[in-house]
Image 1: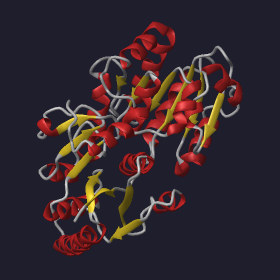
Image 2: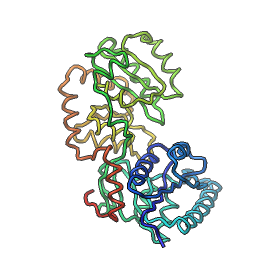
Image 3: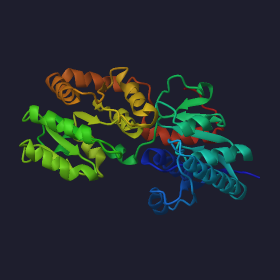
Length: 374
């Protein structure tokens, strides 16, 4: 016997995979549901689950090897079968009424176990392109919830565009003037927020330093370098003669992203799904630089979801990337109507707001998948 008010959520591995499941769990708990998480062994998500008092079980799972090493593939299939057996046992003991996978490799054994146990399967794909795990799981799912429109979607008839959940802290973001005052930035100067995301952005960091040298004095910037790049970026700014430049703030990492976004006229960043969802929610013009090594080119697809309608600019890391970035920033700095136009087009993308996405996901599951749209 299944329990209609119990959900099993298989997610983790990265923040982009974990947070949609976590936001759904918070929403379902408010609606009277019990949730159990499946995460990989020693997952980075465990502290967040423990702090929020969400129970979890661990699967000793690894990603599908990209090499032809037969030993690596043998280890993968051994761990996959062990994980599948454990997931089947959890289905029997927990008796969920729904299972959600968010695309991490730990999700596929849970999704397959749910299908074998006759439990309805739901997916959430944050990116504008299905990852391998979600693509395979899609053949078993009742509905696939999409964070962004997916071109050539193989599961179009079973898809619903729900958006990707973002943190509730964005609901209480300060206005631009207050954010700049808190940061010690000039009230009326063109301000750029630069960050690379959790996977780092050495090339993006270096290119912006080159742009800042060319545009010195014409803008102010908040630059989040990533923890592993902070000292190198500081040294590069010093070498460029910008270390003490007014209006330049350099941080390894900041928790107060809503305030940093609020202060910015322009964002320069990678094109991770969560970043795109934040830009849409906050209507922030952006230059998006997809991570070249992102799996299956999903960051390029994400960037095109905005750039295709003129809601963002897309720059790829080519031989002339430094000069192209400087020119793009100069163009937007000199023509405020262009950034205003990008912000306006963010209103018309049709991408649902991230602050409402968790509720949309919960509605989808509570309604047994009865939500239309793609």
